[in-house]
Amino acid sequence: MEVCYQLPVLPLDRPVPKHVLSRRGAISFSSSSSLFGAPDPRQLSQRRGAISYDSSDQTALYIRMLARLGCGSTSASSDPERRVHRLLSFQRYLHSSRLLRGVPQQIPLHILDEDYTGQARCMLEKVGNWNFDIFLFDRLTNGNSLITLTFHLLNQYGLVELFQLDMVKLWRFLVMVQEDYHSDNPYHNAVHAADVTQAMYCYLREPMLAKSLTSKDILLGLLAAATHDLDHPGVNQPFLIKTDHYLATLYRNTSVLENHHWKSAVGLLRETGLFSHLPAEDRLNMERDLGSLILATDISRQNDYLSRFRLHLDQENLCMSTASHRHFVLQMALKCADICNPCRPWELSKQWSEKVTEEFFQQGDIEKKHKLEVSPLCDREMNTVGNIQIGFMTYVAEPLFAEWARFCDTRLSQTMLGHMGLNKASWGGLQQEPAPVSEEAEPSTACADKGDAATAPSDGSTATTAGGTSSKEIPQGSRES
Image (cartoon, rainbow, N blue to C red):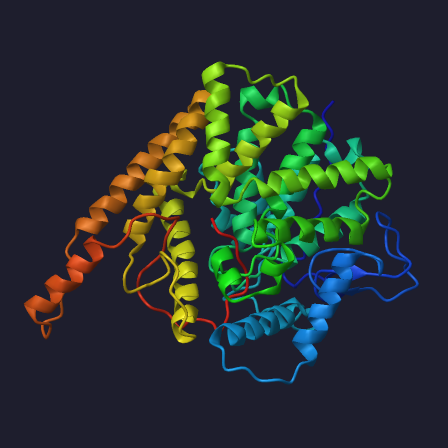
């Protein structure tokens, strides 16, 4: 049965109402709220991070203690790593404060009107196309691409009615999700989450998945895609570890960012009460399965998942009627969606490459400023967009998408591999182009610069321009992928 809903239209000529965005941090706690139930409306909700909890929860007590130490300490330290720690914590507090984040942003150049709203609706009719331009869609929705896209897909599958989701709670949840992504991150922001959600939808429509997945699988897949990088700080896990950040301590230096994204998502689910009408056991299972999907996006565990996937394909023993096998396929689909930028058409792929590389370089600028060891791929003087991108395709993307094509030998899989091959060749061609040399530059200097670029390490991720831009004091979001 196909269920249709009237898609609520965002007020494109003004920001989302303040009462919807009135939130402070990302961890809600109440001494009387139940573990799964909605918070007591009679009490003022406070939030600091991304985990809902009550006063008896040890994690809550630990984070509260950290908050006191971070905000109340007056002792000074000359250790540069400690200074970065305090800066990042303070920036995180400022960024998460809805008193600051809720300030309406000025709409540039024009006020969006019904013409733009209509164009956004037209784009949604082709949301399953692999060349879907998420950057254009984000402009047409006035920066609300993640809310609009996810809401549309949940309605399109009839999941709102099937799971009896309260429309107001769902809308509030999606607004909070989008708002908890850091808009000042060049790459790990709400547009990236929307792009991953759109890619996930394309994979869910593949015959191998479409004929086997349950409605619960689809709901989890879309929610995991939308929340997989929630509250990303714009720096990677090694940075958090070497600066002794409290998140690294909390998660014992293991899948630090992914654990935080998962707990952030759980916090929003509980705060909004989106699943509060479901039995407690079902809610707990949904949260656990959501975490299993998000944790699979940890790039440091790439080889483990890929080896397991390859073994299943070699032995031809993936059984889509088995719940655990379907869940594993969902994990692989989300991993593909998360790093599918090299598989997009060149015009889109190049933009993503430039954005992620700029985020790397901004982290490197901070590390240099505080005299920390610069992380691999983060030195804008030693790396280029091209060598980072080629290395990422060679060692990470190509092996993963080759196995995915074995599993789903479809037109989409071949299209993705084709785009990746063309994009890799394009980056290779750009790498070989001689850099323009100013008339004052001496020939020996120009040759030395060219040699450094040619020998720069080529392992990595997606990419951006190697040109310098003024970096933030501390970037506001992160995950290592």
